[in-house]
Image (cartoon, rainbow, N blue to C red; front, side, top):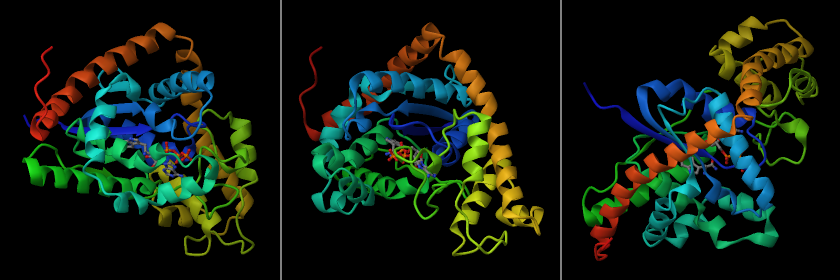
Length: 333
Ligand code: ATP
Ligand code: LTN
């Protein structure tokens, strides 16, 4: 039998996991998990590129791990762990920094956006963030990386770094491919459908948390910004309606054309409620499972402990090879 291919992905523990993160990433992890060897990380090292309150960060990391499991990730068959528990990530990141150009990093749009948002704290970590992401991926000889479209540029850089390294030292890294969903890849804010739904949006009406209750979800969809045309159609210029169609598509698996046909002649009010309902129905079991699991500290600890041990073992194989290739003396212990 052919060996299963490997998937790696992660979400930063900032804000709360949104419907955008769910449709762009988490839901696809769940759908793909049986056909791949999967490694899913709560990427806590990445989150401190923006200043965090320590007590809140610690709690949020556990909340995120628990949400991965509640969303349907099997934490026993897959590796689920906190990034900071495998020191290999920070180590490889340093080495790869020496194979990445300032010019490449300066072109990253996420860096430009985040520096504009956090003018008072444009730190070096924010700049080299994509190198740490490349280390995450390359340490596991990853074949496929399921992410939203905003991460495409980082993935391309990861491939460039890997190819550069391989060209110098021989085949050390597998070159990964992205897995970017068709309809859920870029879910927009419900309040400003020209900008991405973001978990750090100060306006809570702009995003749906996957833990929002049904009333909150319905209220946010009712308030969703659309346009004044009154026609449910999927075309340029109708960003609010396009976004609702994409959300409905992402949840139901129907194509945008099928969604348009289903709601032909209906008003925006009815459509918003229908989208709200499919979202609420999808998220309710996740919320209930979360409430249950979050109390089970021992179980969560078993998952992230086993996850970290397995992640460290696998990633250290790649790291040791890299160290040998660049010319470091073998570690004597
Ligand atoms: P922040 O707003 O704090 O930068 P974020 O919401 O972009 O955070 P990340 O942790 O950066 O969240 O992203 C986690 C995963 O979710 C990535 O795969 C990313 O591509 C995906 N993702 C994030 N926002 C969206 C969105 N609006 N639509 C689809 N996928 C998204
Ligand atoms: N940069 C990603 C989060 C992330 C990631 C990864 C995603 C960090 N390391 C490795 C896939 C694979 C983001 O969504 N901002």
